[in-house]
Amino acid sequence: MNYKINPFKSLTGERSVKREDILPLVEKMKDSEFGVETLINLYYQATGKIVKYVLLAELDHLSKFSKVSTLSAARQYIKEGQEIAYSTFKNYDLIFKKLKTVLLKTRIK
Image 1 (cartoon, helix red, strand yellow):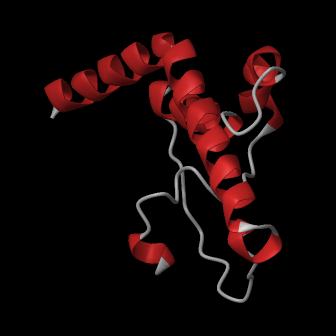
Image 2 (image 1 turned 180 degrees about the horizontal axis):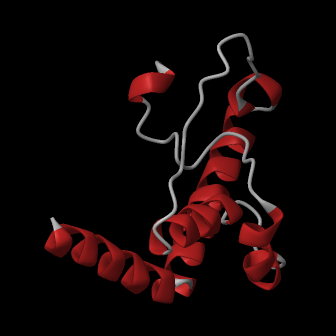
Image 3 (image 1 turned 120 degrees about the vertical axis):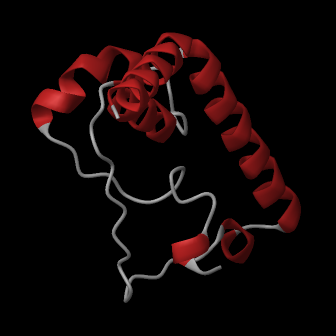
């Protein structure tokens, strides 16, 4: 899949964050596995911070389907999806804060 048009790029990839940005999230991150990326994205968007996506062109990795059976890979993807959804709903406060931030920016323009 072309990374530049990948609709899932906010859910995948590595993260590089400043220590002072991540410290408020540490407690929430402890009981989250695949939802950590969602939590980080929501927090950054809610606080008006910019998330920059960088394509690491020469970096490649095997997909789950290349490493395990099709059934196992499907189960893992379903589990990831559930954890991402759970993290989103669990952190609804960040969603409301994000909406407020977006509305305020729109209002100022």
